Image (cartoon, rainbow, N blue to C red; front, side):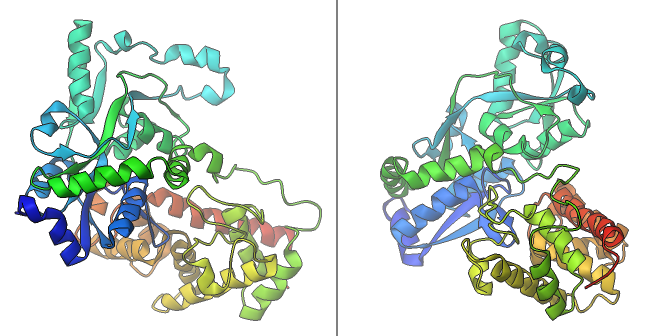
Length: 447
């Protein structure tokens, strides 16, 4: 246990600030090999301010967060932590980094796209009183559960509460609603905003609480750390950097790169304005230009100045920490961007020399380009563990890349890199090859 008088001193001496985080967009996740997350980015700035390295320990069971903190396994809790009276008896809190209300997550009617909103909205819950006799699945040791207990007393009627364990994070519960496994859950509005980008079938408009404080958890035996963090937050939350971090993660609809099912950039006899460049560069490396074009469309829809919500840029959607390695910057001309992207693809292809079939090897390559090598290796190890062929993508490893959004699989000891939205990578590879088939039909002569 860290002594009260040297808590911050020990962190500075060891040159390391350890954060206990959940694997989520709110807290911390890995995107194409880069560490991201709203709370991660804030605490990374704090670590830089005090001159230490930031170490993230992902906690798979949120119910154990406070115990791990008080056992000295970490210095700060970062898991979209709501300040409650009960939690205050166990830990101290930093000043709030935001205030957010709790919202009901429910599924829109199956035919909502073909109807006017004012019509299908009548089928949704728009008043907390309508929650009587409804079954709601929610994390047991959360402020959401506490709020529903209070709401039940306010209504004077029963709300059927189905408790979820701490290894099912709120983002998992949202996906369960979207897929129809459960009908309702409750999460914080900021979490809902981030996830509506991925799950267009969910509705989150009903607020069931007042605005509550979200803060970082700190041991009661670490008053110096808390005071230093509070003082820094007081200044940092007034800066444009803090506002940008919040904007990037909370206003994601403005940065959405979600593709529509049809594409309108193919006109006449050209796939894109960059056909000649793609043909030339792809030919130099021995790749089919139509296959590369299918990947570029998937990444950016051939929009030169495309920027994703996560900061990826350009035709090939390089992350800021990766692009310069290949000589690609946001203002690089198309030829440079495409050349750099294909060189990265070639490098990823070489990484998968263990895959005997060339088409399967390309699919592993594209999955790596999208998700990062670590997550694909996790899926490969899971495939082997569950009796699938780890050298075949189709119907084997792709099955487990998709399952990496399920607690049973991303908590598995062989999954070193944890949670990811595996359905994105699953659909990414499939979409590219579907489009490639279409391109080959439209452009039968390979150049």
